[in-house]
Length: 516
Image (tube, rainbow, N blue to C red; front, side, top):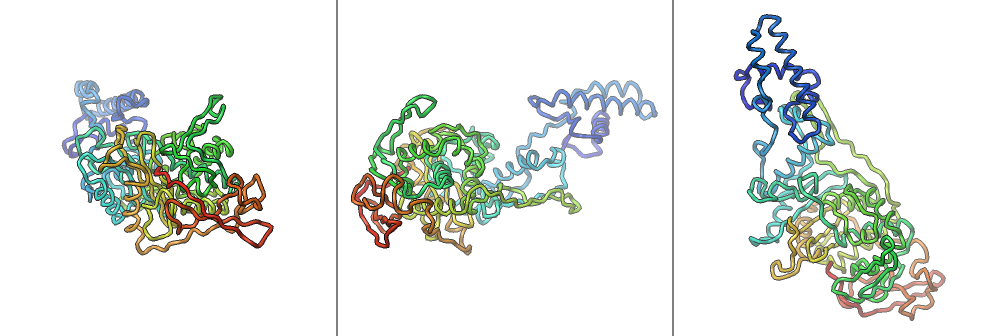
């Protein structure tokens, strides 16, 4: 740990340092990195204690004055081996990216876990983690079988179960490589030595959740032209927003706006629910990265980690209760004494009725929207995301038992305009990776449907601005429950008056769902 040698090889200054370290070792740690703000003070404390030990040895006749003077003069760089941990002994299945997970566990131990470097690297601790090797292997295979060409972008994946345990984490697949980003854990942002990435339209789920939290009906409609300008929306400046491929989508209710990932519809929704409210709710749901409470937040302009997104969506999977993700279940010492044990703490942040509406809508995204490529045969819900110039592509989705976030991109932000001959969107490689992984990870686990909510807030089946009796007008009628059996170029919708037992059904042609 300290000197990289056996005990019988310890020198006098080294022995004196260790003796002085026994009392409050964290305040006399001479191995702290130079850039650590506590390093100078800690080394001075270590020097003072070492000198006291050496003086006591002189006083008791154990050493001479000359020996003590020489030992005191020893520079710390000659005495202490820095704790730059580049490997972790034998780590199994490194081809599955397990070293990134181990590195993150180490980080967790010395931050959230509260353990010192001396405890972590000194030996004797038994750390029980949440990683499921079957799931980890499935995640690695899903990525490598999809992005299988030499110059393909990287991918990161985090999968969390229904009690907050991280079952799989792919932050990279070449931890011991020589590349610039080899040691960067792309799944955890700054905590992994890198940075977060823009979430794109996958962040719309948080805006939708806030809308349902404010009791917006799913039938709320917005005009979704190809481009829209909202006056003085962004700090007094006009905010210009365009749909993917500048597609004009006509009148959309919140279900269709989400299925087609309409930026212009969601820009208006964001102004109605309030950017500050969306940022606050996203934080409560599990986003730990700093969020700018600006209108463009709904389009995923703030940088977040893959772990953050999995955590946030897991709140939807857990029926509106947030459970902080963990990678460690228990830590014991060599004798089996429990030093740490994880406790599952649930915090309700969304009303169950609001969650039911959000989950139904996100299920429709998988059933017939931008994420049909993620459909793996079990009920699932989620949202795609693609950032400007195809820098980042996401799919974040869940069943009632497992939430998984997938990001695809180049670490340096290179545009993904031609990967396997195509531009990379959230509905392409990320959805494919998610589908492959979830097919394996959910095998044998029970599934749950995402039914149409029986309580759609207010005025179910009608817009908030007009009576449902005016169903023939495209500007006032709304689409409440899109048919999952309609083709990609049409959507079948129904509108039911709250004052009548009869119903009217209309089928309207529409552009295909935007692949973002």
